[in-house]
Image 1: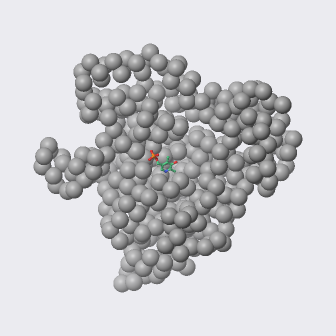
Image 2 (image 1 turned 90 degrees about the vertical axis):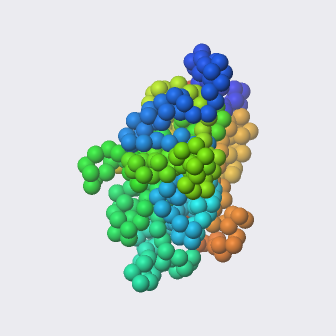
Image 3 (image 1 turned 135 degrees about the vertical axis):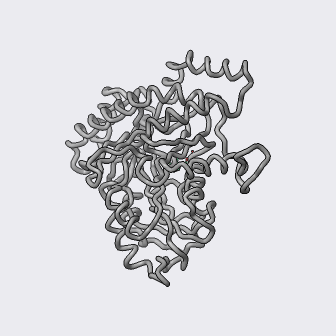
Length: 390
Ligand SMILES: *Cc1c(COP(=O)(O)O)cnc(C)c1O
């Protein structure tokens, strides 16, 4: 019997460790009462752009709005169709709908859990028509204008073939990098490692507390190398104004406040080390899990350096295993138990079970094990011993 509970993630330790620096940010903002905008915002944007190897980063109130604003700034219009995967958090598709676009899905690859380039290629030839030279989705009967690959669990989608297909069909690529701060993708086309968030025309990040880089509240960002996209996202987050009280468009209140930006700058300095710790834990899990043939564990393709936002295994008797671990006070998660095309919220899209069989199979078998920088070898051994008992 395991007597020390093992949490799914530890949000207390990193903040207690950084308490002095974080409190300095709080005190400084408090004394100046500069709550919105200012140097903390600008500094974070510079630092995060540098971290993602992009020219620009725009701080926002959430990752969901980051996806939405990135789509809008990339020119996705009311009535367009945007293609993504059903194996993601609903924020991805909420952002597409809220940008005014229709959602179309392609299934994922069984080994990576992310967008399958092969299924994407089939989507264009089987699920689309050319009408007057425009690529139109048969399902939505509207022009397909963008792709949103999701770098799920902290591993980049296989971007080379996705970018190639996007170029062939003249589509914008917006990366949903909300789980992938610091992940790397080796591009054979460019013969170099690329940072998540620097590959598409724009990318969205989330600073939700549990993400690899988390605020002490809500937050997000758009990264891009395109100056006009960065400018447009800045207008969208600030009521459509570039100059105070002169509104070129109707925008939103999507700003990230100064205090959160200051906190994020403190934490960003530690992110490379935290990501390395996650990678080390993943390697250790893999070493231990190798001995259990019934468990499928994440294997990085040669093109991937993942940052393991989540460590997701696949097993046939998942519910039983999760119950057993729960009984042993080992916390686990399901990311995600019900594919988006089968959610009540998307009943109107008319999908049924069997439409995306890989996503559905993964959903039945996936189980997220504890994963956070402070996880210890000892805890990982306990987890593995309990998995072996099943
Ligand atoms: C967390 C997340 C989002 C949304 O981010 P929020 O900051 O919570 O709005 C979007 N997409 C994915 C894949 C996520 O994991």
